[in-house]
Amino acid sequence: MIFSCDQVETEGERIRDNCKLGFVKVNDEEIYAICGSSGFEIINSVYSINVKQNTWKYIETTDDIPTPRSGISATYYKGKIYMFGGFNRIQHNQKGRHSHSIARCEDKLYLFGGRLDHSISRSNDLWKYSIKKNKWKEMNNFIGEKPSKRSSHIGHIIDRTLYIFGGVDNQDIVVNDMYQYSIDSKTWSKIFFRDSIVPSPRSSPSSTVFGSSIILFGGQYAQDGIRLDFNDIFQFDSVTQKWKQLKSYSNNSEIPKRSCHVCETVGSKVFIYGGEVYNDNKRYAHLNDIWAIDFTSDLVKDLRKMEKKGFLVDF
Image (cartoon, rainbow, N blue to C red):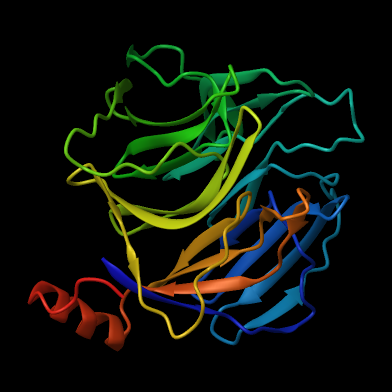
């Protein structure tokens, strides 16, 4: 699949550089950015970006405001954003988890894995949260082999199937295996890719559902003293159950490498925001740029036609 990508120039009360935040579409124009890590500060602020007008806005919040945190997961359902977990290095006695995944199926949220409390221990438990009943239930009764303990992975639900990919396991090994969980049959199974490309092992990429596919961008490989950041883009087709690396045609420079960033689908575009990069000085630099990936522009459609006819090999 070919796509175009361009950096989005925005106006308004701009959010600071940020990573490990929540990024949630609330309607056909707005995405909310919640909490996260900005420089050396953990924050609990809320901003919105209107992707039609390219404007940021600070959202004033009241009542029971969450404490500052990063490494959260969040989702949207019927006018409300549901946020869970997170980490604040100041609160050393906190309980909970961070760097987990949450995906929604109708009025149920499915939480998988993550790092527990203020420790290096990771989990591979699966929990279901009922929005209507305000009740958690651990999904202990299942068939098959579930993923190993991990954090900083991705998790999405398509057609009542939960997909888990990548992350860091309990031995600090960066992985690129993929599992699926059937919500109806309560069955875990590993997906094998014998004749298709697979993203290299990575943690903290961003990902979003686009139709019946998962779009994955970037991430990092940090193991045995090696630190690599990525800016490649992959598509997982849930129908064919194959990965495909996507090609970019852009009038702008390519999206810079990064990890711990976020992305969200609005209409025919995927918006990528923030994150961090390990720079040449061997320090983490936080980012606050936003990019739009467009899969359906007229130029992209023409390029796809040319590609099918064999006129395009690479660009």
